[in-house]
Length: 454
Image (cartoon, rainbow, N blue to C red; front, side):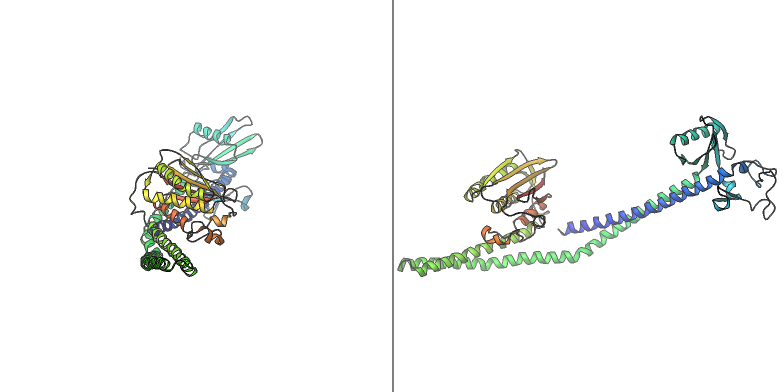
C-alpha cells in the first residue's frame, strides 16, 4: 500500500509538472510565432507599398544594393547626412502604419509575381533575392493562390495577395532566418523542459520516501497494533472458551445429579450467549489480522497457475445448500478452462466472501447470478444479487470500507462484521487485479472482480 501511495504521488507530481511546463512552453512559442507572423506581415505591407522605390536603384548604388535609395523621381533622398541615411519607408496608411528604416529595407529579401484576371503571369521580379529563379517564383505564386488565403507561408516565404483592378500581386518575403530562430527557440525550450523534468523527477523520487514516511509510519503502527492486539486478544478468548466448556460440563453434572430445572436452563442459555459472542469476537479478530496481512501480501504470496473455473464451481456447490436454507438460489454461468496467476487458498476465500455477502443481503426468493468469464487479458468474476433495500451511489462509494454497512439496522440479522468486502478488495489487490461494485436499477448489487489471466 505504501509503495502504491509513493508511486501515485510521483505520478501525480510529474503529470502536474508536465502539464504545467507544456502549457508554458506552448504559450511562449505560440506568442513567439505570432510575433514572427505579425512582424513578417508588417514588413510585407511596407515592401508591397514601396516595392517600386526599393527596386529602383539610383545612381550611386552598386549592384549589391550598397549605397542609398532614391526618391520616386530618381534623385537622392536627403537625410541628416545628405546621403539618405535617415529615409524611412511606410506601409499603407502612411506614418500611422508600419514602417521600415533604410537598413531594414536593405536587409529584406523579397520577390513578387503579378498575374492578370485570367491567372496568367504578367511579371516576375526577383531582383532582391538570389535564392529563387523566375520559374520557382511562379511555382510559389501558384501555391499561394491555390491556398485561397490572402496571407500565409509557402516553405520559408511569407506571402501576401493584393488585388489592384484586374491584376493580382503576390508578394513574398524571405523569413528563413526568423523561422530558423523560432525553431531553435522551440527546440531549446523543449529540451530545457525535458531536462528540467528529469531533474525534478530525480528530486521527487529522492524526497517521495521522506514525504510519505509519516503516513508509512502511521500505517505500520496501525498494522502492528492490529496484529499484536489480535494475538493478545486470542489468548483471553481461548481461556474464556475453555472456561465456558468447563462450566457447560458442570451444568451437565448438576443436571445428571438433580435433573433439569429452570435454573440450569437459564444458566445454559447464558453460557450459549457468551459462547456465541466469544466466537463472534474470535472471528472478527482473525478477519482483522487476515486483512492486515493481505494488504501487504503482494510480495509474500506464492503465485501459481490456478484453475479459477474449478474454484468458482466448487465454491458455488458448497454454498448452494446454505442459499437453499435461507430461501435463495444460485444460478452459475462459469466458463470452463479459465486459469489465473494467484494463490488457490486466497482465491477460494475471495469466492467465499463474495458469495456469502450475496446470500446475506439478497432478497428471499431471488436468484443469485454468478458469472465467470474471460474478457481481454483478465478473468472476470461477477456476482449479482437483488437487495430488499434500495442502493444509492453513496452506498456504493463506501461498500469496500471496513465496518461499513448500507443498512446498520440489519447487523444483528445478517451477522458478520462489515469487513468482508474489504478483505475481498485486499485479496484482489494482492493479485494485481481490481474490484468494483455497481447497481443498474437501485436494487441489484453487482460485485465484479477482474484478475489477470495466467
